[in-house]
Image 1 (cartoon, rainbow, N blue to C red):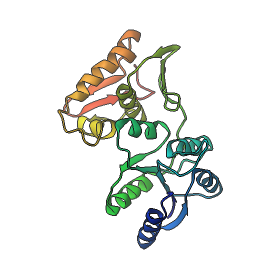
Image 2: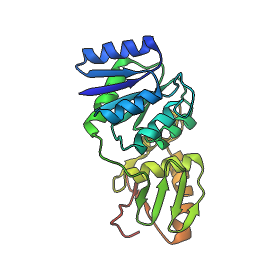
Image 3: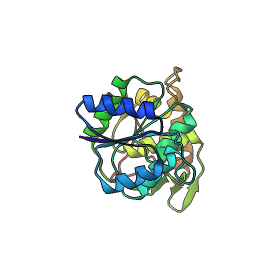
Amino acid sequence: MRILVVEDSVKMSALLRKGLAREGYAVDVVNNGTDAVWIASESDYDAIVLDVILDESGPLADGFEVCRKLRQNGCWAPVLMVTARDAIEDRVSGLDAGADDYLPKPFSFEELVARLRALIRRGAPERPAVLTVHDLRLDPAAHEVHRGNHAVDLTRTEFALLEYLMRNAGRALTRAELVQHVWDEAYDGDLRIVNVYVRSLRDKVDRPFGRSSVETVRGVGYRMRGADAHV
């Protein structure tokens, strides 16, 4: 298994290289976005560990833009973003850019390895730049949602919730899973907050258009009906 580490801290990159090599991975390390985009286009990686904050000027100055560029170039290796910035806005920005997971610093090396293993098991199927379920379209990069020819205005949290539902269309998702992937790690409130946001989503993307694509799965949570379902 081959891992690319994109990290501008010499100390951190050395620790990651040593630790991952000890786990049996072949590891390449680069310290800036320009080299990351170049080497990822030249070699196949099973996963990429990408720091959000990079010591570089220009268009590839942060991990969000690097990830977005990788996806635009057709690199679909799973990306684990790591950063000291743990605001929900940063987590959403990372997912919008095409990242697969997000790990805030400080983190345990054991957790990083466990997340990488999970991403590698999941594989790297090519994902469309725009998600489509029936006539509902979501563009993560442009942060736009359309139902048919009509634009739908969503809040940041509504957008993140809809994106996760669409990426997992046809699969029943528990409220706990939705909170884990959409809300901040620090959120420890009532899981029924999901009900509130699902109701809001339905009011914006379903009811005005006579649709019922976001359905309740009794005893489980919610599901986005697949593209082949009658919505």
